[in-house]
Length: 563
Image (cartoon, rainbow, N blue to C red):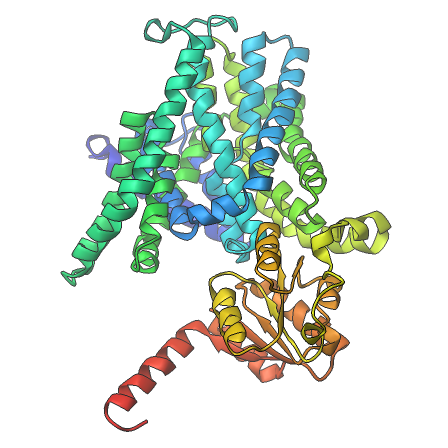
């Protein structure tokens, strides 16, 4: 019976085994992701026992990538992407060049040809957005400035790989492989056509999609049918991704990302994210299982030194290169470490590139096996790398004067101008974060002529605030130097308007150390965290759901004359 139902058998086996091994991994203090990857290895063609259908698993994984990237788009607007362009664009391009050179150099030492070495290096240069999202969400920093920079960086990498995938076939003959008949011609013409298609897709989504799809979502929501709403969300994600790949030669992942971005403008974007979450989580598991299925454990025994070199390039080489680039762009050490950890893995684009390189006669069979080995091992290790970021930062800060200096790079925006109005420096409100929530608070304070100083991690936003005549300082408010620059000593109130719950306690501690009389107000979406902070008396906490319920209840009571 199982042979006549390969789809059901594959899904049932993959999810069931992933559940068991993921649970075991968590119990022995390893990331659940490791269990999912091992589950894939066990049902793959290179280990004895049951072998799942690799083609079906691959297609299910593609759906997982689509839904996950759609979810990113729902939380990541075009404005967010543009705000980090000054670091994400040059950083990603330079990092791709450095990582490609490292990979190609090692492959050349192994005796590979130019084409194979280039494909190998490119495959090691691009990180998995899916893995990054899981890591950022697990740490609750997806919406933080560092999280946005990391996601923006990987989106630029994805765009670059789209161009590589289209340019590689017409260039294959020059690189020592064979050019497909339908791809013969001028490579520059192919590049121009690719750029034109990608630009046409982006314009279509931003101009037409931004108006059409939110309206479609609104019409479906009016039916009050939860099933139709969920179907509409999933259909939009999958169909736009498919259309992008079919008509514009844009990857499924990138197409789904832009689908999420255009739906973000809808007032139902949060509901769309919630409704699609279970599907995204389930298919994400299938993605990791499918990666494990492609892995041949024999490569670890046959070529251990080569595997070690590949993993070293991915986790150490790329990370160091990214950290140096981020610091060179005058961002703090914390941002450099976060971006480095984000890039210390490879994923879906690496598999696609390896498969294409092999089919074009550029990449040897062992090259594809090494890329898969590097992907599996780096995915398994990446959560541990992320977990080590904060302890490493604490350790290096305590032992290195240079590290302490890099946390506060010389930057004119990191200090308030000497000409700052004196009324902003006494009895003022220190407002941490100037995003959607912080901006509204700031507008209210300005409207009532209450002095305030903004502490913000987005350099471009600080520049704009100063241009608008608002006192603002650039930096991470969990760093004492930033709050000192905001004159927290003389402030009457600290308002933390960012969702980064991990750093809130540190900010409160610094504020009360420097100014014991200061009152602190924070926002959170975590009910347990809110209760704990209120019990400690550390701050006045505003819980998103609680404030919404209170305001709605007050309106109802007013309606019945009970307020």
